Every structure is written in structure tokens, then in C-alpha cells.
Length: 150
Image (cartoon, rainbow, N blue to C red; front, top):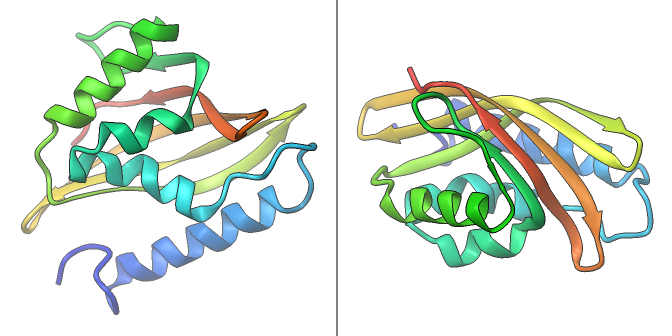
């Protein structure tokens, strides 16, 4: 059974993550519309779908990406272009983020967890960190850092 398929342990994890994120975000983090489980799911899923257009609206203009070596960190338009290109080039059947903690840092939300990518029976994992920032159009990712997939 594919990770995240209805009835699989991954589906329960994804529902649990949605509840975790919904509960933390809806507990009051400013005036901006809180990010929803759908927005969160879209971040990871963009890599399975090659959907960089769906990913772009979730990234803050001051976005900072910190991929593992040998790639380098970048900020702003360069970081956005890097991540959109990576999403468009990635060929996996599944990509999802499983948060293990979400904490407030002033006006920000700091989310840490495991990023799962898979193709068939092979599933790779990496730790990730996202920092969400409230913006006029809702919550946007201002920082995305991850480790090597193993």
C-alpha cells in the first residue's frame, strides 16, 4: 500500500499533521488568514505533481531556501526560482511533509518534521524546517531548510 493511501498508516499521519497544524495555526497567530492543511499539503505535493505553479503562491517574496550540500542557500527571487525548478524536475509519485512540531516565534510559525518522497515501494526521508510568516494574502513560507534524503 502506498504511503499516504487511504487506510494506510501514512494517511493517518497526514490527518494527524492536518489536525496539528490546524490547531496551532487557528489558536491565533495574528490578523492574516492562517495557513490551512490544504496549503501545507500543497507544499509537499508540488514535488510529486511537478506543480511549481501551485507552489509559487505559498512562498514569501523574502523566501530563503537552505538545501543540503552541494547546493547553496539563496534568498528572494533566486531562492524561489531554485525551489520552483526543483519541484518541476523532481520525478516521484509521492511527496509529503509530516510535521512533528509547530511552535510560535513572535509573529512566525516554526514547523519541523520529516519530508517523505517516494516512488513505488521506495520511500526516502529528510528532516525539514519551515518558517511561516503572515502576509496580506495569508501565511507564506519564508524559510525552507532540509537535510539529505536517505
